[in-house]
Image (cartoon, rainbow, N blue to C red; front, top):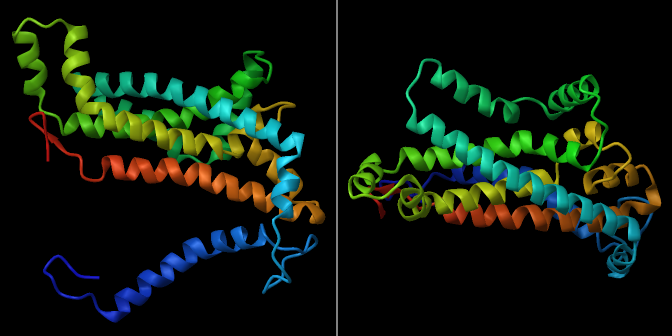
Length: 271
């Protein structure tokens, strides 16, 4: 580990970094280990033995597949809505100059800053007032409230790093608005859209609170896991499902990180 000046970081800083990493990721590693344990009643360390039978049990559970299916459907739908609304909101905020512009931007990103239970209670109240029955679409709308924020933040950041001269040059050369968007704007924000969509999908897939207040009788994967945790003999199966959730959420986040890590657009060029 070296600093920007090429000097080695002190041992105290290295130890602090290792401690933080262990604090964040050791519980996840334990969950993965317990998914293979032979014990079906309680957590023990070290595990009394290792087995793959719980993966087979989870594979043949119809309720797990139903929960996974609903969670995937909700994540895909809410991500699609977030990509559309988040991109339009970012374009409007970036291209327009008006009084209260920063306030509008703050209002857009506010849902992700609020605790999920607050958003859930607010949505439940709104649905009750509007006499909207709880259904698949109320779950999607609930998840879209914070997925929009993720897409908006990615796209607005990319717009701010993209030269406005590119759009003006395209229009001056005779391109209409649709052509300018297709050949100039979209290539510049494509990776931001992809990264924002992946992050939105990962957040939606494992969201608990908003689903709790809008799901009605339908069960998404996080709610299924919360229900099963109160049954001691189901803990290994729940751990197997947790491993699946970790993989499904980790991969999009990792890809989003690599897509946006070194991509800075200046005057249309990647640097």
